[in-house]
Image 1 (cartoon, rainbow, N blue to C red):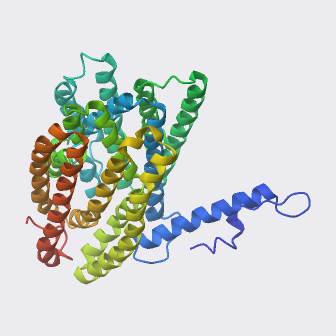
Image 2: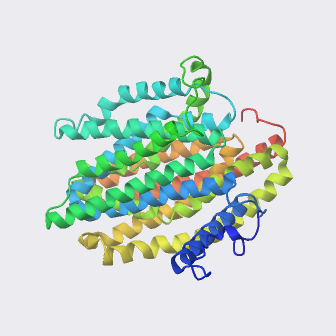
Image 3: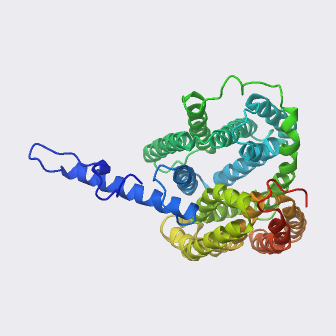
Length: 466
């Protein structure tokens, strides 16, 4: 490190006419000091407790992930306040449809880019490949809504295109080790969302009792993503080079794209809120969609911290795995201990947070408060297995996750068809619990079964097939 940030002259103090630091400058310096401290602690967790600089790749990656996740979660929690319940139901359905379309189109492209750092892969070809798949699937996903609302299909397509571009560019930039560029782009995107929030608040005050339209909310959200994409494309340190702006060589990397893409497609049916489509057909209709969407959204906020930790740990785990099993196992156990401590606080927040927010903020959702708490708690509890699945990805043993994925698909579709369609939100709680628990338990079992294979392959380069 370059020095203790508490005593470093870089802490941000400025001297006024009297020779003493000004009050505002002192406060600014303290805020910078706290920010550096948080980044340093995050970076130490990501490297197994070693000292690293606050602007290291691990710390910047943690900061970038946290910036985007926090800003999007605040946005997601704010949106229900300006939309009517039915309007929020349409917004949640649209957002989910766009996410599904994005993942079907992008498949395993981000993972392929991250697995091959330093290579100049055909970014333009991979982007066009994703768009082609999305264009084929788009009519199937919006066929039910296109005739009802002309804006629905347009917004789904626009949101999916920007998310595809975002996913590919961020992965490409991280593979090039330009984490500072990603952090800068995410910060500008967060600022755009903040300005959008301010605009919505002012518009809400001027309208009085009139509520906002989901079209406006979606357009502002798309605009914030466009800001991030343009920043990555135009910045000197992150722009796509002429060598990458090509189609040649695309077919050579598609095998990796489709290999990971199988898990992506399974993930769609388990985690991308497909319960919403069953709820839309249930007696609760769009009200049920809104309740489920808000419940899952409330779960995303406490999950920010452990999710960012796990992503920041992955490069260090990959390096340890290449060095040998003993070093990898020590890093794995150290990270797991930290993860468990953080997860205990996350679990408490997932139970208390939604109840408090409904009482104080989302008062119109008071009749469904316990359903919201149930959805949020189930999502957080079962996400504990995410740490183990990330380790399987690091060791290139993701095929062990195929069985949990298939099991989750079968349980999810079956339980929602039997319970949600008939009983609405009440049935959705049970179906959601069955699906999430099945995947979590199967993932832990798969990790234990794959451990001998990982022990064999550690320190021997890329593992062979399972």
